[in-house]
Image (cartoon, rainbow, N blue to C red):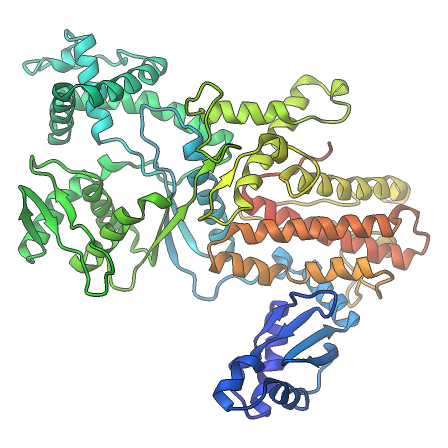
Length: 620
């Protein structure tokens, strides 16, 4: 199904062409002034210099060359050359009908889907997830769902930090505390214990202690670096200890990601790239890309167009050990071999831009990736407290992600919650709390920093996740009341929505009472009649932009576009709801149209919040 913009583009590109101008100038956009028009064409301004003609004259030429159609209601030219457009109500109604009967509300999958790897985890094992991991998880999950829904084949990778200095710090500190463990005895040839000599709680204490001590004690840091090198070199006892650390940490990581409703296809880490490093390094040497610099092996990645110095990409340190650049490049080698991706996306803190710029340049220069493979840096801003500084606990520490989730859930207040069973109330607060957190994050442009305001995010008023859910529950309540009102002559449910992970929707059908209910229309009939209020028309106009909006969000890697869109739908619906007393409507034809409209609104909202990574409850 064509998007509304594609349908209008066809008319106005032809109009520009018929008038003797470049057809591409006839691109249509949603009006920035909805009080004046619904859509706009601004190409006359762009054409003025090219054709040495006043924009107003060009626009009027176009106006006189519009082909015959059943879509446009009004087309006006406004100085200095804007073409303002309104479409016919009959066209809007027909478009809504097609959406209502089409799979996924008429959203068309990409004609040429890509294979996309999204790297959006990045937590270091042996450390609990904290608020700093929130954005990569939330943004990455939304991008994964959006791309899958659009038709791309997506491989989501947690890409754990599991082979760097943090492991050396833990191993060295354990050797100080428990030197008699067999893992530290290089002469040990037997099996190692099956149970870890530490708990998750122990690890959460050991790492911060070791990290702090390494900053004060140079000898301690050197020992930790040597432990890291020995681990990477395959020292048997260290590898066994490393496996214990992984087993203990992964359980906690998966549990916390599950609370965020975030999941990965691959739980791989830096260690998985290790087998690819020797051949990659040798290739870079053989082809003359890698050279020695101050004892380290590096690849020069500077370019003539650089405005600032770009340091070389370090492949191996002077002691021969691997660092992040090494494992990121080797991971690309692995991904090319296994998945042959068209695109690899890294959802990471924007402060890592220089690191990834060097890695990307090195990968392209050395042939680690194909020239046509797109490497994308999706850099996000920081989560800040109300003081504008990175979000902290009251004690000044970094807040654990589990604590953040608990805090938001506690902030959610529900009317009459004292009458809700405890287990049901907990589930409801978890659902609303997750919507508050995810929407509060995703509504911001990815690259922007934002203030994490728990009170604001958990509110049921304003531009918040709970407000979106409240609107959806209000629609469900209206449909349920109408279902009860009409239940006497039909056993089939009045309204039902089914969806899978990549949602596809259907509405139940009852021919016996189709005329007075919001189900699928009978063959050849449209459930949508002429709009009786401006607010009804405004809601309808917003809904017909669904496919266009989602395609734009996918194209621009911008979940914030979907947030703005569903907030607009919620606002338009609530104005319409107060204007039009749906439950009191006695005209069956009008009621049928109204219910079809709000049913479609609910379907569109349901698709979008699923893509953003949260769900709506049945009631609040």
